[in-house]
Image 1 (tube, rainbow, N blue to C red):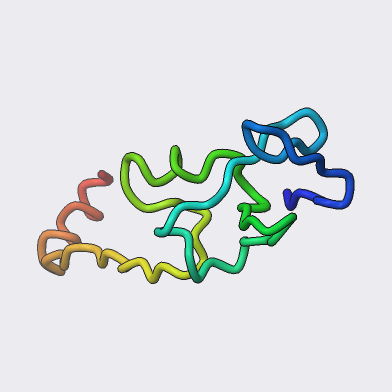
Image 2 (cartoon, one colour):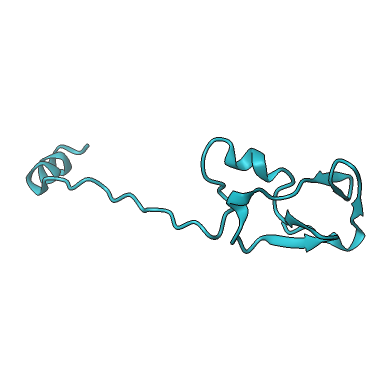
Length: 88
């Protein structure tokens, strides 16, 4: 859900949009496609507190990060056919 900054109001805590305080982005957010500029500041249009999304690792909304896809472990075909024959 993208935030519409047309009715936003600047406060001392951040920018208030529909009763939600939006805080400015952090340096890790630079390059993301979800950034919108409002009143001289840059804000995430998806999440109100970008620093909290980066606290435990990568932000799951970040469009500028390339994530590695983990491949499944190779299964021995002989064991797989035995399991299928057993019904497991």
